[in-house]
Image 1 (tube, rainbow, N blue to C red):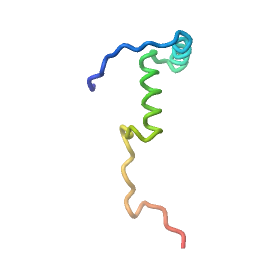
Image 2: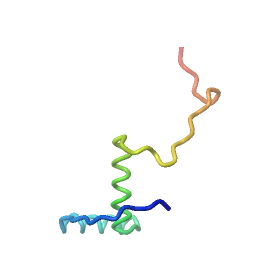
Image 3: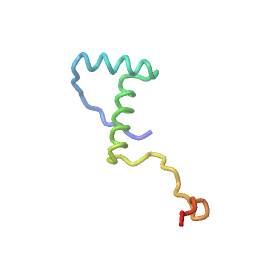
Image 4: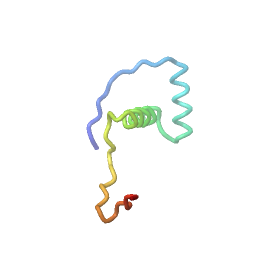
Length: 67
């Protein structure tokens, strides 16, 4: 497993309660839920490359172009 950076994070109590309930719904710890949400946001914004991207299709597998 890759090394993980440890740091202190202060959150509003209401936000933490929301994250705690959300994490429980997803069967994750609060820490794992926050990491998941942050990775998804970074990926969707284009700032984080996919961890396991699909290999590019070969020419023979690509859909035919319309003429």
